[in-house]
Length: 492
Ligand SMILES: Nc1ncnc2c1ncn2[C@@H]1O[C@H](COP(=O)(O)OP(=O)(O)O)[C@@H](O)[C@H]1O
Ligand SMILES: [Mg+2]
Image (tube, rainbow, N blue to C red; front, side, top):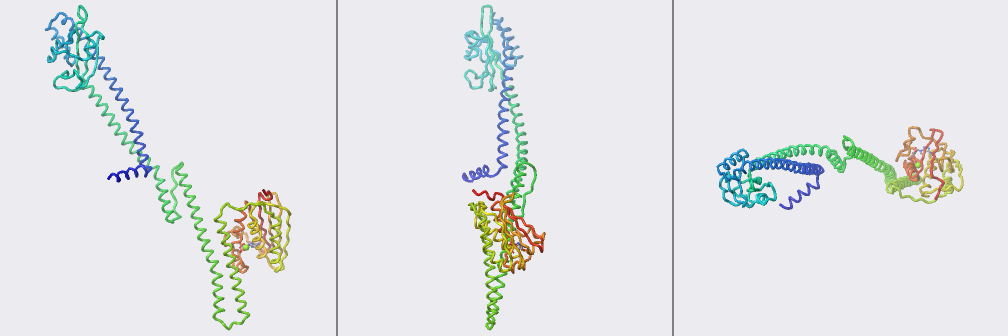
């Protein structure tokens, strides 16, 4: 039982914003009301008591003055009459006390002859004060029977000195019930409590509404996140209201959209990659089976098949290398070598490596390299950029074509240009050639051993170096790829 309730409390405190808002509301409303109510009842009580004290004192003084002459002359008849009349109009009990503190006359009679020891009476009899006033609860010493036999509530005692011809002759005590006063106080308190209950109910309703408004977007968000966590990336949160919660919903949706896009690209990439890998494998299988099931195949034909298979294996290796390069770049964001690279030497080296390939096809490879240009970066990756571009230029130019590579500084930074007079790229394809696996002419590209990954790798490498790549091309006339490194030449 104990643990259950403790768990419940923990849940209550820890679980829901809604409950916290409700609780906060109640604490605030309850506390402020308690303070206000205490102050208010205090004020009312003070006011009522003060009024009562003033009234009683005045009446007692009057009665004392009226009775004094008869007490002085010891006229019991008259004293009785005066006291009885006054007691009735004052709605209380009057006692006449002599200087020794003994009750001489009592309108209720049963205290006659008794000696009163109460503070207020002593104060007046000893002459320290003309009058005294006090309120006493039942049970305090000297109070028993003072309110009459049938009453045991609080009593007010008002005492006033009585003066005769030769100075003070005693005191008059007026005892009155203050139940009606307490009752009005009770009424006030009761009214306050009912107001409090009303306010509390209103606060509860308001808190419920507010907490609903506040928590709804959060509940929505967490429901959506749960769905997304289970794999449904298409879900979005409704964007409503204003302020932080709206911003939260919008930001979340942006993130979700990004994730969805990423997920799509990724699965598309995987399916493209599998497809690319399957094609050479299928070709190889056919060729292999042909060789296997035709043992009497002429030797030259067999050699040709073997050569084709070798070519397919090269292609496979190329694709896998490119894929590995891409995934490696994807996983290591930001951490790239940054050392001074002699771009002039690097460009010369790329041309030196590719010139034989071009010459094999009767192509002319020209270069225009400004010497001693240095830039911070990753040498191997910069090499890969230019190699891929020059390799494309050779591949997509006819035999006997012309390829020009240049390196120099321009206004916007260090610039590489790779130009050819080859097939060119149609305008509608130009914006796509940097996408993974995109090829303008599938058959031709495959024939030349292309994977469609080269330019996407180039683009990523250029971006990693803070550069930009653009293409200008006219189908049938040739293409020019331009790479700009804005901070180029300022090697640290
Ligand atoms: N210099 C170029 N001239 C004409 N087309 C080109 C050139 N460079 C690239 N392309 C086109 O862009 C496509 C993508 O290039 P790339 O990513 O390097 O793939 P790949 O060379 O493996 O086919 C190529 O398939 C080709 O259609
Ligand atoms: Mg290529």
